[in-house]
Amino acid sequence: MAGRGPEEVRVVVSPYRICPLGAHIDHQGGTVSAMTINKGILLGFIPSDDTEVILRSGQFKGEVRFSVDEVQQPRPIRKKGESHATDSPKLQEAGNWGNFARGAVYALQSRGISLTQGITGYICGSEGLDSSGLSSSAAAGVAYLLAFETANNLTMTPTENIEYDRLIENEYLGLKNGILDQSAILLSSHGFLTHMNCKTKEHKLVPSPKQSNFQKSYKILLAFSGLRNALTNSPGYNLRVVECHEAARILLKASGNDNLEPRLCNVDPEAYETHKGLLEPNLAKRAEHYFSENMRVMKGLEAWASGNLEEFGKLISASGLSSIQNYECGCEPLQQLYEILLRAPGVYGTRFSGAGFRGCCLAFVDANLAEEAVTFVTEEYQKAQPKHASQIFTEKAALICDAGDCARVI
Image (cartoon, rainbow, N blue to C red; front, side, top):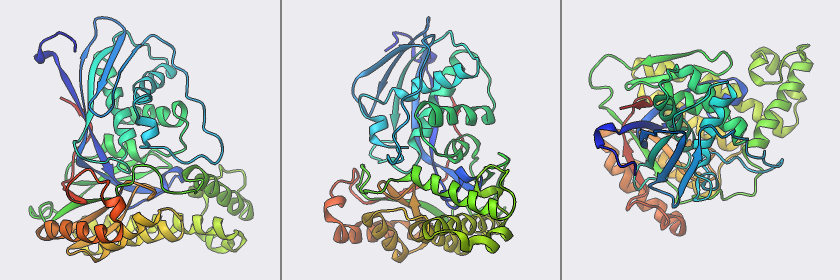
């Protein structure tokens, strides 16, 4: 594409992430856990001799062209009630996939950073993998940030890039998600569980036990639904965020703290227990998910550090159940997939990866039984959802992965 030698090509490796515990609470300042997997986005690029950006994609048709000195304007905010669109094909289809590159330029421009070097680049995701629910949008945003920064000799910390990717998602694309996805992609380290306090932005890497066989004792299993468009009439993710804020507002007012920002992280757990009866049923469920999920994260960190995969897995499955019952996300095919995984051989624990309206479920599985689990899930899901099973990219309904590392330029 650039007419230059291969030795000049740099490659951004931007992995997909999973969130074993801490589902749907990052936007409320909750505590979350995450890690990356050894699947993700590769962005090969060469700095331009000018400000022009030329991009092609392995997944989408067409060529994206623009200049880094063009002033980028945010996309129109979606109307109230529209569903959460992170990872949505609508965001990444042929006409829109260049928005992540433009969003990266917008984020840097909004903080007073002027770019003088564009890039010629080719981006692709892991072949044969439906990345819905694995934060492919955050992975794409991070990839473009790292490419533009490298091309312009800019050195940014992971914390700074977490903020820049937040600007891409929250301001440029108009999403109301938190910072879990980009934090996992930028902060994770192989062999560690990333723990983040989304209120203080503090994070730590929790090591697994020092015994050498721990990392070899489990695999990460992704089970695909075949759904690439949200199968739901629910107003979706953004409405859930609004409901959490309303629950926080009521609880803070009841406890005499209505001067604080209405986020559930500002509600003392004792105040929640005292005043939760004031919440109407939907708000009560959202708050219950938040406070119980925070507790599961803390218990999960202890289980991970001690090498107790059985306990770690039980907490993951409990998180999945609360996502269904209290956060009320997930459609029938994904819920069936969750239930199939609970019965699969060697599975320690499972939950939706994402909101559960499309995409996949994640599971931690005994490494010795991983292949058997894949076969079981493939056969059972074919029986339960033959139409959707036929839409899965791969021959089997599940894929075995390993833990990954952070985003980087090689």
